[in-house]
Length: 151
Image 1: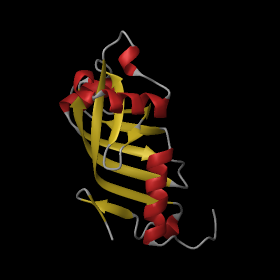
Image 2: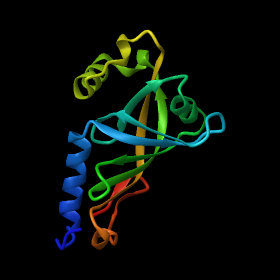
Image 3: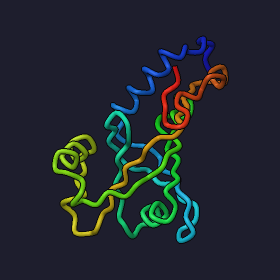
Image 4: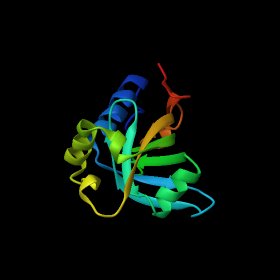
């Protein structure tokens, strides 16, 4: 624990955007009738308005997101966490576009387009984003509501 004062809104927004741009991996929580609740780490690409992930189409996460597009993501350690609640839309490799596919591969070091197993991309549009470090930052932790940044 730290005695550091809570960050203001501008600093928290800046830190959160920096984490979305620089982090490579996050936790993905899904629920679907076919696979039940599932949690898995995946790599991602942030384009400034949405996150792009990829997973085998037949995996529990892939099946869950195709059955129920609601998703919760977590970035960072528990004492500097960003939680994203969003909606996932499937994006087929053919519809991805080479620039986006290349950007994903460069950022993550992983290129699903080169694999034999069918992978599915998902574009996740954030609906709510929260960020906090310690209990003193729980107030004001909501940085995005209904897909719009606060402030």
